[in-house]
Length: 326
View 1: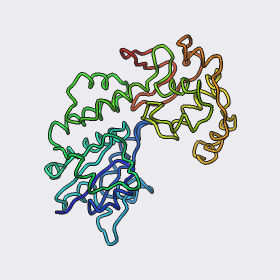
View 2 (view 1 turned 180 degrees about the vertical axis):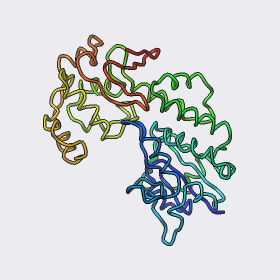
View 3 (view 1 turned 135 degrees about the horizontal axis):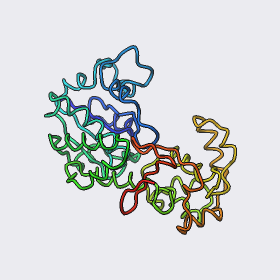
View 4 (view 1 turned 90 degrees about the vertical axis):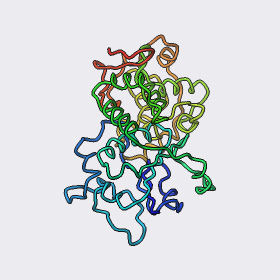
């Protein structure tokens, strides 16, 4: 039986070396931060390779190819057709669940593959310890059916997340999403990152303020994940959130290196070095926001994306007990 694995980015290289499948294909796009890629880019990723594509714009550009493997210029569906089993390995994280619904939205239009698909959901992230036994792990990760219900939910979720307001995602929460078991908690985590009706900050930003009662360095904020209790963002995105708190007209956080204002966002190493030497504390304004006495967004610019929703000060969708717009 020829087996292929489609997976989130995570630890795809170690999964590729595990021997569980002839080939492992990781998905590259990340959808939780920044504007969503244009629809034409997302479509081009899956179809047959074209010379119009730039580096890393086709699914085949991200594969650890076995020696002698063929088919790099095929569409993803065409490449998958000869395989007897196509397993989808995705984690519980919001990043992975967004990739999963995007992938299923596409595969739902490929009927020749539908009967070959099986879904393995990991209850954490897709990072494996150095001594992880893949063969043993495979026996303990149930494989689920992918059929009409899974495709329909994925298509609805992907359409809702791409919409210009979060309203359709709220509507999704009133549906039975159990066919994609980890989608509901992922949606709730994402919605929690919308600005609060009271403070104007999302869940991770508020946890940063709370943790600064005890910690003064970025390592704690970025890497004590279980203490922070929010899991949507990676280190790069966490840095952007912290800069928003510290470098605006009325900062809630003091002590972050002012040099960050002039360093290009792509210079990750230089930015990381500044994070490491910064010693952070709450400003008086930050203490007032933490006490729910001030609204951060009333004093600082907001300009970021939540799926297809562009959040700005004059178009600020907030989520608490209900979704509101201010």
